Image 1: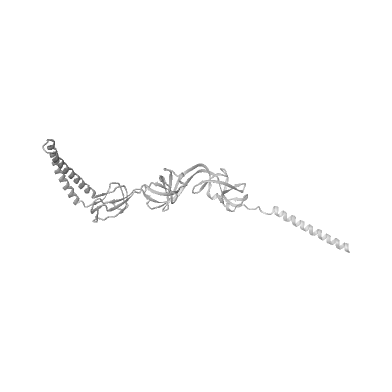
Image 2: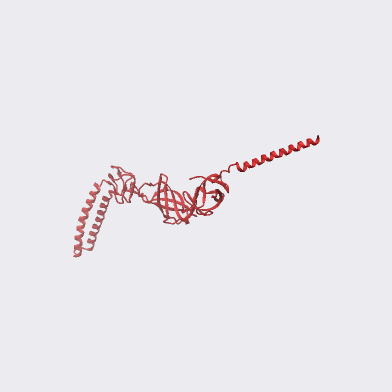
Length: 351
C-alpha cells in the first residue's frame, strides 16, 4: 500500500514537470517568433553640406544725421514769401524764403549813388595828384572817402542779398519756424535742414572686440519699422580712444538712404562682418545639442543614432559651422534628438 502511494506521487511530479516544460517552450517560441521588433524613435535628418559663413559683431543703435543746420536770418525784416515746406528736398544755396526788401533796396540805391559820386571825385583827384596839382594829403583824404563809401555800398548790397534766406546745405526741410507777415530778427532761426543721405548709426563696441573691426568693413542694417528691408553700410570712423567709464570704443557706420525710406531717430540693428569662411562644413543650428561645455550632434548609421561631440565655429541666421567632429555627406538628426540616447534605434521621417 505504501509502495502504491509513492508510485502515484512520483507520476504526479513527473506530469507537472512535463507540463511546466511544455509551457516554457511555447512561451519562448512566442517571444522569438510572435513578438514584433521594437519601433525606432522618429526623427528628421539632413546631410552635412558645405558653404560660406560669416562672423559679425552685432549691435543696436538709433539713426542719426551727419549734416544738420539751423538756418538763421542774417538781416531783420518781415517775411514776405515762403518758398519751401517741411519734408521738401532742397539744394545748398536754394532760396527758402524772402523778407520784405523795399527798405533795403532804397538803402542800397542810396549807398550806390554816394559811391558813384565819390568814385568820380577819387578818379579826378588821382589825375590831379599825378599832375602834382594837389597835395598827397588831399589825395589820401579823397581815397579814404572813396574806399569807405565803397565798403558801405558793398554792405548795403549784402544786406539786400540777405533778404533772400538761402539754404547753407542740401537736405530736407525738417522744421519751418516762420510764417508770412512775421517779423524776424537778425540771427533768428527760421528753418531746420537735415541731411538724409547718408545717415549714421553709432555703436559702442567693447574694447576686446574692437581689434576685429576696421574702417571700410561692410555692415548690414535692419530696421524694425521696415520688416522686409535690409540696408548696406560701411564703417566710416573708429574712435582712437577707449571710454574709461564704459570700456567701449565709438564706431560710426554710414548707410546710404537714396530711397529716403530711412528716417533719423529710427531704431536699427547693425551687423558688421569682420571675417568669412568659405567652403566650410555647415549644419542647421537646430541639430546642435549644447550640453555644459561641449556641443554634440547625432549621426545616423544603419538606422542607429550615435552621439558625436563636435567643435563649432561661426554661425549665421540658420546654420552653424562645424570645425571638427563630422564629415561632409554624413546624415545628422535635426528634429527629435532631444529624445535620443547614444546608439538608439531611429525611424527617419520623410521630408
